[in-house]
Length: 121
Image 1 (cartoon, rainbow, N blue to C red):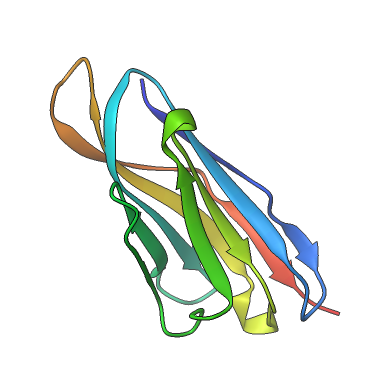
Image 2 (image 1 turned 45 degrees about the horizontal axis):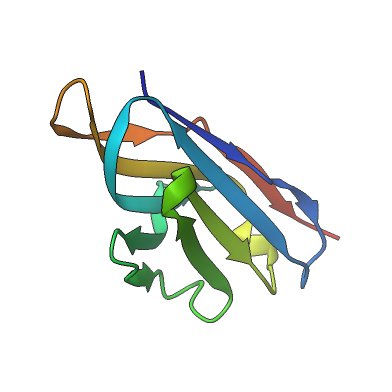
């Protein structure tokens, strides 16, 4: 059974930094794409950053130049370094992965449970 577990959220002052982690576990054969989404109260979930297996990345315009996504393929883990945080970055951050398991040999999408990030003075 595949699990995605996020960590690293918390309360930070405007201008501060946080680093989120998402570790995938289970009988994983390969991970294609790993993503970070966020959902603020009363708003739709939005894509924040994406990293593909080859290392290519893309970002939402609202976080370009401030957030950096990276991955450790050996540990099936994706990171989100968040710098120069703003109050509008406050949201629950979710990890999403498109991966293939040894058991099914098919690619499916999995979500983590989310971690709260609050930017406030």
